[in-house]
Image (cartoon, rainbow, N blue to C red):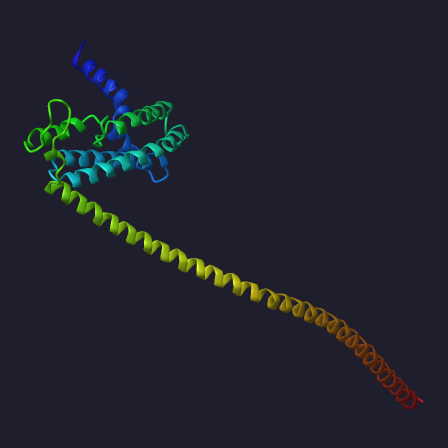
Length: 265
């Protein structure tokens, strides 16, 4: 086998497996008309962002911040899981310029998404990296004590600085959330009052609109009758005027004939 044959063979194998390359698939489908490419690109971006946050959680020393970041990661995973069926429907949709192999590759990419989403560490007990993330912190804390018989001593239940800081941050977030809910409630009440006022105003305007409609109908009927009478009057004037003109012309013709008769005689 020559070098040219080897290169040709390698090139054909690379082209065959290019469809499984996520980056090339995303670059090849950046067209604005391809909904699958846009949505899959958004999936990839959110998965990469979630993985970066999970990596930051492992380095985060503030437990409250780590818990908040894990909660955000779980929300992102839930949102992505809800969007997977939509991506599956778009994967089987025919797009101009795509071959059957490329459509099959899209389906393979979508089928691999649930496993990739589940593999993102989120701090739960079933997460792949949850144990590794918290194990060094627990092992490096000598003030956390466990009794050998499985019971906790009194020192364990005392409030520490971290737990106090976590409680304060939790209370602050709760207060901000309640304030936001109060603002939303006030806005909804204002919209409700505006809608009620608009409904009452419309109820008051309905009789006026009905009266205007009836007046317009009467005015239209009167205008039609007036046009008919005016047309009849104009026709009558035209007929009488034509009769008078005919008589005058007849008299002129008779006068000319009498003049010519007298002259010729």
